[in-house]
Image (cartoon, rainbow, N blue to C red; front, top):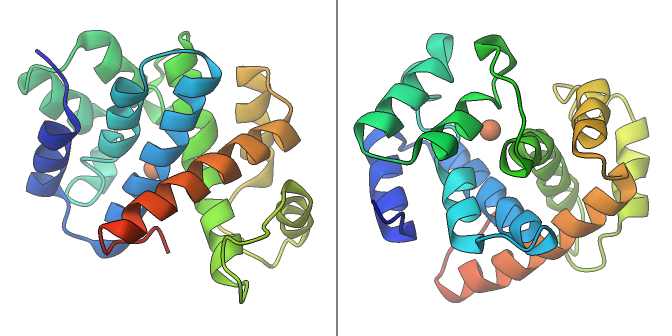
Length: 188
Ligand SMILES: [Fe+2]
């Protein structure tokens, strides 16, 4: 089955109508497209992986990962693609072997953290740097739900220095924000 963004978005809309989860999905899509560029992989495929990674989270939060895997395999998505999505939930105990799965794990929370940083800046994404994001990482009161150790662990698994990873994601998110703004949408 050919995985198109149109299909991924339509499948996602069947299960997600929360504005915040949709924005998170778009941010992870943007980040995965950037990581595909970094690894010289298929930006469309990786973007769809990001877009669909939390397809089950709104309706089945207690079985997140397992249900998403079943939904996506039933819909005919490629097994490796579905496994990458399943593996981003630690509870499923699926090893992250591919760069796609390691990237998804690494960008999931980090992209949300960068979006949270942009939201509190008057200029939003304009002028945001890895230095300012790292300053916020040290501020434990900011976005306290984000586990800093987990972010570091995920970057280590991917073998990319966290500062470089933040720079990649800032670039990917800003590019995507411009594209979304032209469509009357936003990551923020
Ligand atoms: Fe997520």
